[in-house]
Length: 417
Image (cartoon, rainbow, N blue to C red; front, side, top):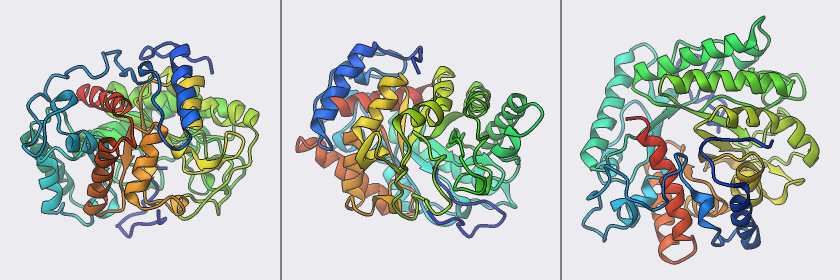
C-alpha cells in the first residue's frame, strides 16, 4: 500500500504488514496429517484432517456457537453456526471504506451479516476530534448488533507506534525506540498498554501489531520507519511477547506480523507495491526470522498476519499468505492455534494472482482464516465474500476447512464480549 494515506499527522500507511506448546492446540501429529493433505493439493484445497481446524479454545468444530443461531437470512438455508453460506463467508472478511463517514452500503452489509470486521486508516479518522471516530465505531457496533450475528466486529487499525499509527497519542514511540531503550521489555509492555487504551477509547478492539520482523540492515524496509524492535531475534521476541500480553490483558486482539518475517527485505522490497523474493535459507528463516514468532505463540497471540513476500527456501512459487507449505510452517512447526489473517489482499505482490475474489479464494485454500480487504472500497469486501461463498458452493474450497476457520474466528470474537 502507499506509504502515506494523505491524512493529517505523520502516520505512514502500511498494513497492516520452535517446539512451542500453546494451550489452544491439538496434537502435532494431527497437524502434520492435515498439512500433508494441504501440500498434496498445492494451491487447490485438499481435505485435511479435521483436527487441523480445532478452534482456539478447543471447542468442537462445527458445533453451534451461542449467539449466532437464527442469524441466517431468508436468502438461503442456515448452515454451520446458524449462518447462511454468504454470512459464513462474510464473517471471515475485513472491509474498509474511504473518508471519514462509512457509506450506507457498509452498514447494509453489516446488518446482513456479511462483515467480519472493519479496518481504519488515517483518512477515516479526524485526528483533532476523537468524538468523530468514537461515533463511527459506535454506529458500526450498533449495526452489528442489529444483524443478529451475536459476535462483535473486529474493529482494527495499525497502531504500531512511532510513524506507523493511525490514532494520535499512545504508544508514540516506535518499536525500534522500544528495543533500543534501557529496559526493552518494560518499554514494550508500557507501549502495549498505551496502544490498547488508545484503541479502546476510540471504540476499537483489534491492533494489527506488533511487527516481529528482525531487520537485517540499517535503513531497510522495516528499519526505515523504525518498525522492527531489533536486529537481535531474541530482543524482538521478548518485546513482542510483552506487547502482546499487555494488550490482550486489556481486551484488545493483537496480531504478530509478518510471518515468516520481512526483516531481510530491502528498502525497495515493499510487498504493498510489488513482488518481493527473499532469498534466505530455511535455516536462517527458522533461526532468525521465525524466532520472535515462537515467543508470540507462547504468549498466546490472538492472530498472525502472513507476509506477501515469496520465500524460495520454503515455497518457490507462492507468496507466504497463499502458500499451504508456509501456513503449515506456522501451524505445524510453531504450533500456532489462533487465527491467521492475510496482509492487504490488494497488495502489488499479488499482481499475478487474479482479482480480489481469486486472491481471497487462494488465501482461504492455503489456510488463511481472515481476508483483509483494505483498499478503502466497500465493493472489494463484497467481491471477496461473493467469491468465498461461490468457491465453497462449487467445491473449490472444502466446506469442512471453512467451518474450522469460521470456528476460530468466532471463538476469538466471542472473547471480546
